[in-house]
Amino acid sequence: MACGTPDDTGDTALDDPDTTDPDTTDPDTTEVDTDGPAPMDCTVSAWSAWSECSEECDGGSRQRDRTITQAAENGGACPDLTEAETCNTQDCTTPNTVRIVEYDGGAFSKITSDVWMHNTTTERVAMDQFDTDATTVFLYDGVSQNYYLNLDAQSIRTSGGASTSTSFFANMDSAQGAVINGFSATRAPYATGDFVMLESGGWTEHNTSGSYTFDELRRDLWSVYLQRTGGGALVRIDYYTSEILVTRNGQSETLLYPLLDPNTYTPGAWSVRQVEHSQGSFTHTDGLSWVEDAPDGAHFFTETQRDADAIWLTDSSRDVVVELAIADGEINVGGAGGNNRFLYSIDSTW
Image (cartoon, rainbow, N blue to C red; front, side, top):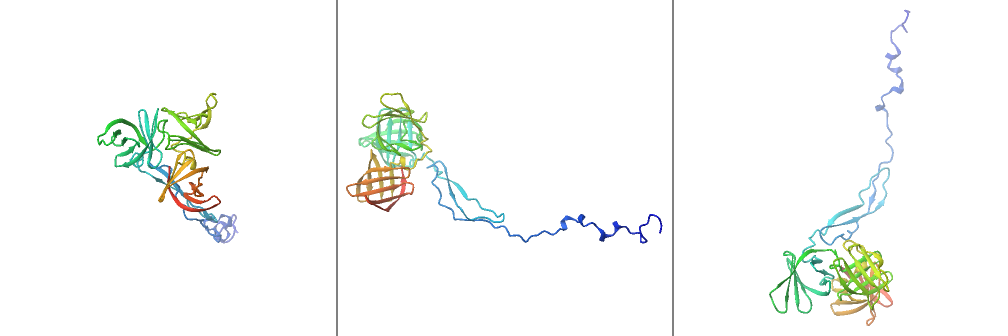
């Protein structure tokens, strides 16, 4: 055998495929176990009803939800559980949707579906809305004057008596759907209640402790000044500093509640002064007094209780108790002993 030759054939171990180290095998050729359980996506419920729109006009948003009824397994996926969309995109400044018309020295504020308040520094007059057309809201002061709020011309005109001619009253500063100052204010919400202006020109405060009546003393650009009926505490609602302040027994004015934004905050049943249904309406007229406009005539009620979700009214002459279930969107009726039954669905609230 010649020196340096490993064997007679001349082959080496590197040339022999059978002697290849198994650890150097191509990893792509390694088998993978695929016998594990397959992913399973979750299952979900049907969509809920849409929530109320966040705005009455000029565009708001609403959402609906669904829930998981069976969880995903083995890495499966779930679809979105919340969906949102735009709603109430109509212009707030049409005659049918406008709520506030301001001018230099005062404002007209809509407080129910057919009643406006004309507020100035010295007077508060309730006015009936008797018509609208494509450009104008028509109001009557109940005595002799008609007012014409023309949104296109941005002007306010009046006529009196049987006269068909109109005269200029004021130019509009703004026409919109929101409370922005002392002249146009009709409510003042806070965390646990609300001050609400009524058709009588007085105010009622509702909160977790009860209901209280106030007389309006005056207004200016930023504030509304109230006094507890019967000569009690003085309350100033300051829409500029967002504070509700009180003066008791001639002492210094102190903070009563932080004022929440009346444009965006909706404190449930606290602020409701009218409830409309398919056959008529219930309207808060003054103090604790309500009147029902029904197919068989007018019925009179006393408010006995209120919370964030509902208002309870009693007509003792007929032994009738009515629950205005604002949160549930329905009106229920029963006797003094209970046993409520459904009466109407609520169409709208003011």
